[in-house]
Image (cartoon, rainbow, N blue to C red; front, side, top):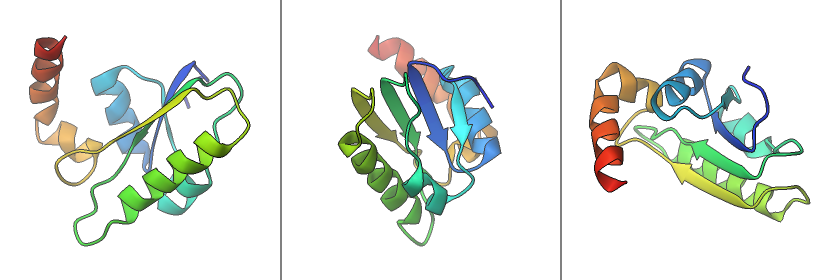
Length: 113
């Protein structure tokens, strides 16, 4: 697990968390599944939380868990200043890396900057 940082990412699976770290360079923790994502609360010192949601094929489970997590963390008494939720076009961010989409994302990010 990566150390606590002022900006912290979370994702469901370990492979997804590692892929998010690879693409975005953000310390990203795996919360194992959507149920644990909903229960996740940021530790002290985290000011910005990025939730890397799964884009589940036949349900909105991953997105619902991400938005429930975001809402709960914003309402909690903590150091948090902002939460953002990101999701890939389909699947999860590990699929994103395995399909080569990280190249497209890096090009887009550089153009937008």
